Image (cartoon, rainbow, N blue to C red; front, side, top):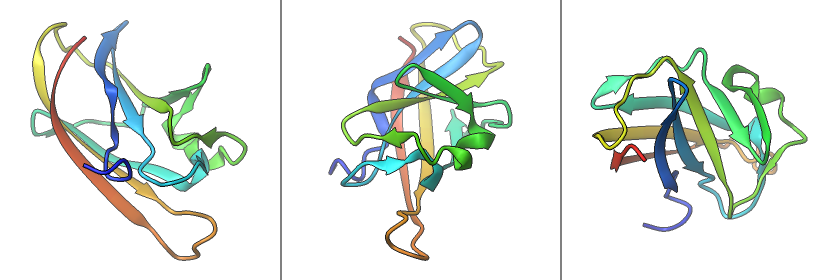
Length: 126
């Protein structure tokens, strides 16, 4: 899989304080502001996960997923993972789950482009 096709980070899936934490990678060849990246969907074991309370964590900062479009000054560097944090989950440490994540990227220098990437993987809760 090419780096621009991979969107699930090697840090994988963890649970902390009742929240699922999924590592995500930027599916693009150069750094972009978070404002042009959209988390479209997350499925765990075939069930759609409600992202209404989800947050993004990156480089010591955290913000609501719903406010991601406002993050014009926060740049996601291609070699770094960002984390999707979804509260209210109850996955057992050590258990294995099928995860599917879909991201959209709309590079600001290519007007009208909206590129989507979906990746599915079987991950164990670390």
